[in-house]
Image (cartoon, rainbow, N blue to C red; front, side, top):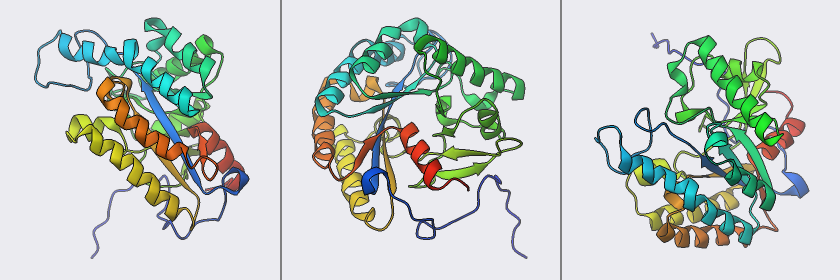
Length: 298
């Protein structure tokens, strides 16, 4: 007898070659976006990426390293994205509103940006809450960003990408059109939810073209990470002749905003920018909106 596997019930298996055909705007086949994570952390408690593990709280070394991204690294990245005319998806903890709102305003003033909700702080993990408290977390993040920046976020990335069994349901009920939490495909995927509207879109978000898993967790060299960006792009650019695809690049300013890493990142992004006439440089929200029009049902 085959084993009965527990499943998530959100979508069925469908091979990449067995999908509805569609194009991105202007007949393009590869959509490329940058997801830039703006995060703020509690001092002396909670989670956070660690440059050096096993330290006691207050962990000044790691707290200060992460805050370098907000104070310096993100500003250097802003200059880089502006020079290359890259749009950016800003994935924002609502705690940033009290810490350094001028950073988000600067990006919105200089770049084509989308605001994406990212919980309150990455000091907490989304799947540690009961239903009522998780719903409150989602609503607080959405409402604070909406009030501060006059843009209601359509997209969500959970703090620590940690969904509960009901996260897609709560996001749909809170008015979110899409989320970035699942890294299971190179195209968007409709996910079933309880009640109305009955579906939410999952937009691909990378876990390997992502500086935290690659550099912090796996300890790869920053030049190797930038080479991966180039190889990922070149291969997906060729594959997109067969069907339209999404390539995401996930960055954190305290990692890739360090001066020595900026140079390698600049070379990788310049390589992508050189193909801008043949690809769609965009944001996750624009990807979601276009896909919903092209493939309106799961």
